[in-house]
Amino acid sequence: SAVISQKPSRDICQRGTSLTIQCQVDSQVTMMFWYRQQPGQSLTLIATANQGSEATYESGFVIDKFPISRPNLTFSTLTVSNMSPEDSSIYLCSGRGGGGGGELFFGEGSRLTVL
Amino acid sequence: AQRVTQPEKLLSVFKGAPVELKCNYSYSGSPELFWYVQYSRQRLQLLLRHISRESIKGFTADLNKGETSFHLKKPFAQEEDSAMYYCALKGYSTLTFGKGTMLLVSP
Image (cartoon, rainbow over all chains, first blue to last red; front, top):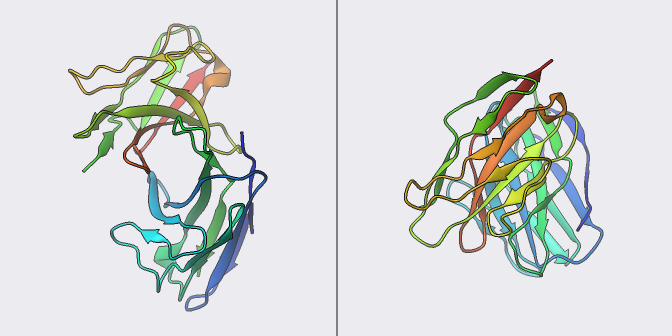
């Protein structure tokens, strides 16, 4: 299994600012994903982080708002840009190994509060 | 499009009672389904997957393609089972989650 670390674990941000969340995996994973979990809601996939190329975004999410990097197999960042209170959420990094089976491993999440 | 429905936001039972957390899905292909669990102050983790047909912590889930369901069951609930449970469907490469059901097991 993979252990996924995220930081910051939580932050309080001002409207209009941007914050970058870092995700580190302790072993190589073939795929990495970023999810958002808004209060009282389920997990919504933001994008698939592709190594060395642009992320693949889901409907409703755009690169200008959520730029993502993945310079290598074990590290990715998600930036939440020009934040508004609606961006207050838990952001989760996840990864899937190469052995198939579909299991995702999750980080502990980054809880952002935008004032 | 793929969709996962968990109709109950909250399920409250007494210790020793049977538990069934409902999950229905919509998917045009051959589904791959999972149950994830999040205990208080812990990260989301895999509980079980339909492919392995295993029983984890006394929980089982059977895929019923006719009813497009993947309900999670346990014959005798324990207090430590209290957690948030998410049903998830794997499409081509991504995982779609249901809204989750909070299970509360009272002594």
